[in-house]
Amino acid sequence: MKTVFFWHSRLQGLINWIIGLALMLLLTVILLQTFFRYVVFYSLPWSEELSRYLFVVMILLGVNIGITRDNFVRIDLIDNFLPGFLKPAMEISRELIALAVSCFFVYSTIPLMRIGRFQRSPAMQITMDVMYGILCLGFSLAVLSLVLRLLARFAAGRPRERETQ
Image 1 (cartoon, helix red, strand yellow):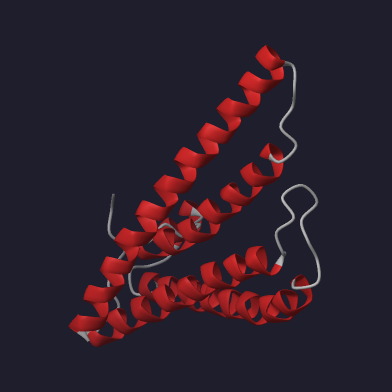
Image 2 (spheres, rainbow, N blue to C red):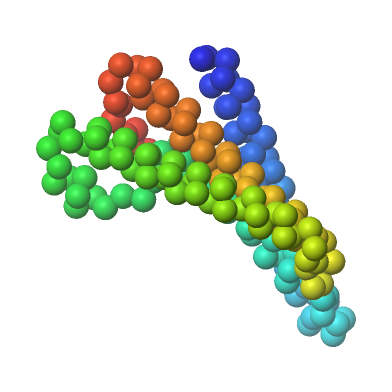
């Protein structure tokens, strides 16, 4: 089990690096578009599309990081209102709901990837199965992180409280 968590943490490091690279590329593309539009008076036709795709990559890979770091959406009023013995049950229910939603999205992206082979993006002319594949990858990584998170909870013998950051 420790080996799985070790490789998962290594994968998280790689994903962090990819997100940083995507952010640097996004900033470069926006800077180039600004330069070309206001200095050269020519707009790059592919910059908006590439920026959008890089943003999607950052968000979908970042979901995985957020799950690993326990950054779930919470309503503090509900969490503070619950008695201590119900808080772990609320945490587990959040994770199970997130797991169900992520599994649904993984399942939903598979037909989109099949259809995307026949569709090209307007400006860059890449097949859309690449973008739908990124959707599938992002939610698959979220499923992996949620399953490992739940396994870690139950392997410890008791649900653990949320770590404060």
